[in-house]
Image 1 (cartoon, rainbow, N blue to C red):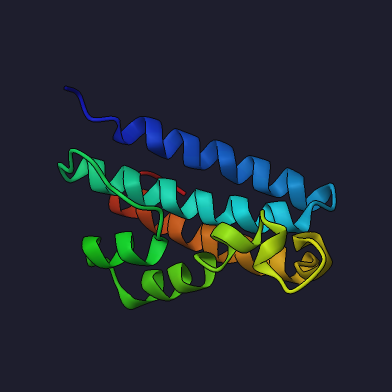
Image 2 (cartoon, rainbow, N blue to C red):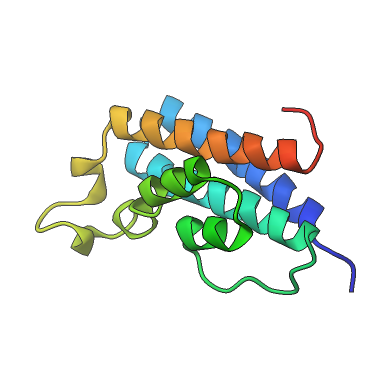
Length: 129
């Protein structure tokens, strides 16, 4: 079976555009979740390009550790993994909904971390940023 690495990278890039649109439109909690997805899909692209046949799980940190890229990417993963649940589900907080807690500042920070991962993956894949 052919590698789907390019498809995963294209989806990460498409999600990065969705992330920017979400921030612009004021959907900050959703943007935090999408940022996690950008990084996860970018790292899965790299894993597939290196011959992985499947990647289980959604933790950016765990995928980054398995790929042994560098500490900066693992640090970004630790930040972004916080949003996998909290960006979507009300029960991630004691009361209210995610958008009550995740603001523009959180979304911009998450976007910065996601783009750091995406750009590093593109560099490792030999693609321009």
